[in-house]
Image 1: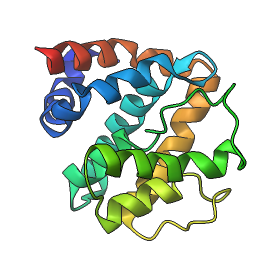
Image 2: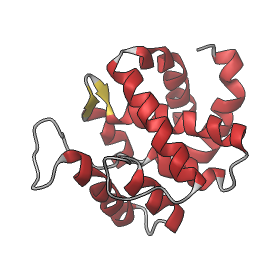
Image 3: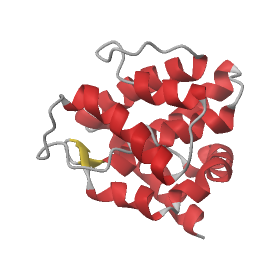
Length: 168
């Protein structure tokens, strides 16, 4: 990705998310593997950045609310490859993410809650009810596929620039 071409989106993304990006628990997502060797943090920034672009293309309302929920959609804070639960990770982690978000950041809106709980649809039991939920669900699937195929590495330059500017 070309930083110059992405500059407008990077600036907008940072304005919407910098407080979250600088949060200690959000930063801790860097230590958890998500898809192969991709960290949960990298994946979440990758997804939410692309959600912002989709919101722009589709004229979605509540862009800030949608992008912030997308950044936190995998805020489950455990190593899912090794830490097992009574329920399969696919079903468990959206609920755990909501629990962690609300404990750390406060109550989610109905839109944000539905976005996070439904992002694993159709494997999850919760159906996306809002445009933002569908944007996250479809973007997450595309980005996860890119993670496994090692194609998300192309986002690395933009990711590093986002982190650099958010910290600055």
